[in-house]
Picture 1 (cartoon, rainbow, N blue to C red):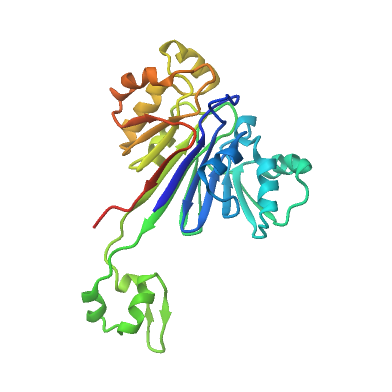
Picture 2 (tube, one colour):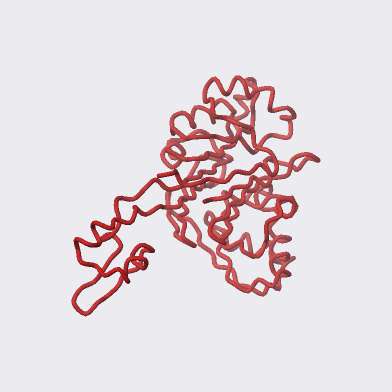
Length: 303
């Protein structure tokens, strides 16, 4: 299962009822953070999750509302006696930006590894899950992210017996292990059926609608997408500043055939986004509003 928590859903500036942008995901004892806006630490504490097992931090881009909470978070992670390396992923300039912010957080008991994105699409595999980064269309270089957890096929007793594989090797092969014997090599595909549907969550913000979003979010169990503006009269502003409206996000969700969409990254001027939800649901019915602390556990489909 993949646990998702939208720690903050505001854009530009924090409000008393809305923290800045951040998302946290947990899988198999490992945590991923996407963006780290002001108030991220508060959101993690309110959720009751731990800072220590954050293994990866991904940045969509380097505007302040997406990264301003990083120095404090690093200090807290250091105070939690973390010693394992921390992987950071983001557009070109990542090391320069983070090291500049670390002037106020210089002494950490763990190292930071940087993975700067250069291509339009890149895949990073870590901790049993796959992170797909894809370029979107903002006024600076910006990426969206998809977190995927693959699921192997069912164990096939018939295949194992047909190939005369001893029972003592079954559990190891089922876990994906490769076993080298004196006379042959045993691999998991020799005992497993076809791969089953996994889990997929896509997160994108600060962008105009673009085909890369539809492609990378296609079939997602959960699609978290920016809805900077809801009011129809803000369409020209969305185009000018390269953001999205609720309706544009809903069209993407429909094209990508996702199961569910959460809207996030609301403009400070959007005080009552719920007023526009009914109209958006006419475009994509399975739309809901993000809010600080909104959570969901994504499970594998039952066989």
